[in-house]
Structures are given as structure tokens and as C-alpha cells.
Image (cartoon, rainbow over all chains, first blue to last red; front, top):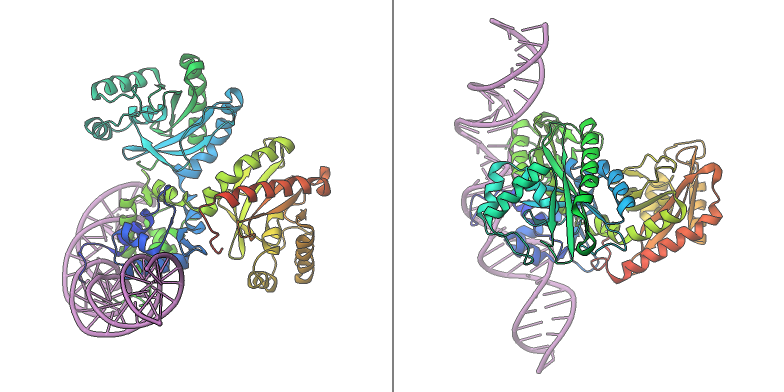
Length: 257
Length: 257
DNA sequence: GCCGGCCTTTCACTGAGTGAAATAGACGCT
DNA sequence: AGCGTCTATTTCACTCAGTGAAAGGCCGGC
């Protein structure tokens, strides 16, 4: 083969799936090939197989989209829908009591992924999307997930530049390190206007059967009417409730994130 | 290669993903190889690549599960999370008004797939699972999806044996054909104790921008206190509301299901 | 000790996958 | 009609990624 050797067929197939993003969920074959860095004929053949299986779907407009079959398989992810199913009742309780945004997230490498969100119609608008990613160092859930992450992950985040979202975002590694220690000491995290200047979030850890932190839950409220200290026990209690349900089910053991 | 020629690498990778089911979401490599009908070394290599990418995750127990990365990609499916996001507010309204189970489903080939469910704590327990499949001929959503499906799909369902769930399940092709005509005439479907003897569901279609039926929404209520004729307008209105939001967004055009 | 599961590595073979090039359709502009 | 640019598919000869039988390694149970 003339192409750069060392590229497996599997990696090409996965690169095609990787080409889809929240910003561009519908792509032509050419776009797909460009993003996956594959020659057009190769992309054409792999895509045809993916469509035949249902991993991709071709719309009337000729563009390809992620297929329902892939969504079905994805829904079997324990850290995705599995976690959501267990957490949702508790999240709804938290929403009923506060009528504020409730968020559930897990860590994937050095980022967080939002698993579920209950957005009150009258609550602060949040820009997060279920299935979307975000940096660990700014949000409440992110601080919790980072505080309890393995050391090597923490170091990776602390040594890389910390993106600034507002003037209150922690971008100094030393300050972040102290903030994480505080999270571990108190058992909850507060992100005060570190993502947007109008919002504040309070987050607590969710633990798996072995006691390791596998997810985080948070309340996002309008900053001006927020009392983090009053909200913390509420969020922590929710976290503990979900941790308990995790202990009794959750497939079985925790996959290493 | 000694193996049966004609099996592409891609098909093997997809077969590995296919091995996971709601009943068995955590598999050892050997189980995985058996279900995908692959020799162990082959499965081992493909699985290693899938794990490296994040499509699969390996737990502390050595079992493989669907990975979060695959859930992320799956969440980009327009007919999955995309549809859910658009429909959820309306579904919540329907729930607030009735406090009964609200279900959202789409058709995939000759079955239906549940996209979302709001299950009231005090409502009839339903056995459906988000991401789960079901036959088209019994449920309310199924009857709607089948009534507006392409002729070849209808014929496929009508000529195959119709599984019986209760004594009221329609298993006669002629009767089913008449039921579907009635659905098309009235614009809604009623499944009266055709899945379980305690539940009744009323369903209405959801249409895409081109007018084609792309999904169905239903209320599932306890049979003894149900009044289908009273519920129908409510469900139909919800269906129309969601259809309207579909017209203005939904990525763009409808993929052929 | 020995067997039954697990899973990974070795090694020589070979056809599935390859991509440049050619083909062909679909649009827009002049 | 003619040209340019975008699409996507098909052809064809080459070759290396993928292959699986067999061997090796690692637990636990008996």
C-alpha cells in the first residue's frame, strides 16, 4: 500500500466516527474523508460498511450522520446511560427542591463529559450539552473530578496551560492545587463565576462500590442569589444517595476512566 | 488467511460492538470472541484497538464494557439524543399535566427503539428501557410508527408471525391491517392491554420537515382508569408541538430509517 | 501435582484493503 | 452549450495489515 503504513483498518473506522462533532453532526463523504485524513475511495468503502450496519445514516441531502444503531450500542455504556438511569431519580429530587440546574458528569482523561442535565425553564441558562466535554479546572463538577483523580491526571492538568473563561477562573497551578486540597478536605467544590460571570456551581463526588470517585453532581445557580454553604449539604446528600445505588448495581466494577 | 474469506475487518469490529446487549453489557474477551464468532487472537487484537480509542473500557474485573467515548459519539445521533433534546420539554409538559408515563420512540427497520421515557414514581410501572427495542405491532408508539412506515416494512411485519404478549395482542394480519388503517384515519393509536393486562397507551405521530413520520410519542396509563378518547388530543397536540420544533432545526433532513 | 478456565505472543502466509487514476453525475456561472 | 468545481464511485495491480493454529503464560480449584 502506498499510504503511510502503520494505520490499521480499525483506526480508520474509528477516525471516521471521530470526525463527527456536536458542531458538525452532518458531513458529506468528502468532509468525512478530509477530517479522518483518508483518501476518498477508502473513506467511501468504510463508510458504506458503517451505513450497512447502521453506525452511520445517510440523509436525503446526501450527508452522513451518526446512526441510531450506534446510539443504541452507546446507550449500553455503564458510565453513560447506565449511570444516568441510577442518578436520575435523585437528580429530579434535587431539582424539585431547588428548581435550579442539576448536572451530572464523569471524567474522561483530562476533560469532563456531561452525562445528564436537568435545566429548569426558569433557572440560569447553562451552555453545557449532554454528551459534551469541558475542561476540569473551572466547573464545580470538574474540580471534584480533578480533586479525586489519579495523580498523573492531576499533574497533566496542572502542567498544561489552564484556559481562562472569566476573570475569576483559576489559571495559576499553585492556586488550583490549593483549591483541590480544599475540595478533598470539605468534600465539595464551589465554582464561583469561574465559567461565566453570572453563575455559581456547587458540586459533590459520587463514589463507586470500591470507594473511588466515579462521577460528580452539581447545582448551578445564579451567582447573586447563591449561598454555597447552604447548598453544599444538599448536593453532598444527593451524591451519597447515588453512591449508595451504585454500590448495589452498576453492572459490577468500575472501569478505569 | 485461513479464515472464511469475505469477512471484512470492519464487519468484525462491528460484530464485537454488536456482542453487547442490555442483558449482557459486561463481557470477557472469550465471551466477546464467541458472540462475534471470531478466533480469540483476532478478537484480542481488535478489542485492544477499541479500548485504546475508548470505544470499549476494561473494568477491574477484566470484563469489557461499552466505553464512554462510544456513548459520546452515539449522543450525536440526530434520531437519538438530538430528537430527545427537542422533544423533552414537551414531554415534560405532558407529564406535568397527566403525571403518567410518557414515551418517545422511533422505528429502526421492523422494530421500535425507545429514545426517552419519563416514568412517574406513582404511574404504572413500564418495562421499557431507553435504548431498548420492541416489536411494532403491540404498543401505541409501535402502531403509529408501523401505520406510517413504508409499504415494504409493513408487509415484512404483516407476513411474519406476530408475537403475542397478552390475550388482547393483535396477532392476526388482517386485524392488524385494519387497525393500522384506523390509526391513519384518526391520527392516533390506542394499544389497550396489548402488551400487559394492566396498561393502555395512546400514541401520536411526530413528523419531520418533509411531513414524514419520524417518531411517535405516547402516554401509558393504568387501563382501569383510562379514557383513550380524552387523552388522544393531548398526545396529538404534543406530537404536533415536537413536529414544529423539528421543522426549524433537526440537523437538517431526515435520514431514511 | 494436574486440570480447567482465562488471555497474549509467535510466525509464516495471503487476500482484504489499498490509493492513484479514470469515470461520471450535479450544480453554478458565463 | 461550454467550462470549472464540486461531488462520489469504479477500476486495477500491488502489498502489508490482518490472520489463526499452535505454543506459552497466568491464575484459581481440586
